[in-house]
Image (cartoon, rainbow, N blue to C red; front, side):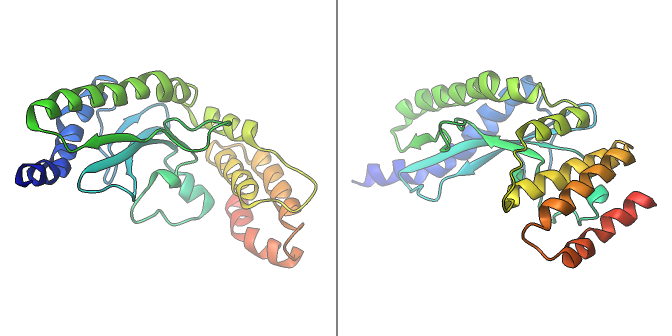
Length: 227
């Protein structure tokens, strides 16, 4: 019984070692050799930064740590273009494009990896195998997506491709995406395109919000566009 408790107590320590001694070195070899506070790893490209982080499941216990890998593409300067304050603690959800390993159109839940309490000799083999699975998923699933998002222009094209506009009340995701596309146009110096997207944002927002309120909310962005 006591030995079982020792295995459980080492699970969190093993998880930290898995990240620091196995996963991060492997990500360094994949080019994720930069550090950003609060993130697992980062890689700068041509005007964008690829980010990776770990999401630990709330149902993790002393006997088992469940986690997945989250990825995101950040475009430095987009907050300034939007006139938004930069988050005090930047998270994957703040990225213009993001996802998690295992999620796709027909499967919304990510792939959850498990690090279980095990005796020391068995744990070493299991942890090495687990790290290889994580790094393999980053290589085979995440990197192919990120390779298509190497510039702000590519990120903007991706957002445009994912945008589905209807005639009814727009969901928050649609309005957020339109706003981001407009901001990227401004960041890229295409003020005419930014103005067109702001007009579209105003028209879609007015489907559920009073036009004068919409105009007031968009005024700072239009001022930035005119400056």
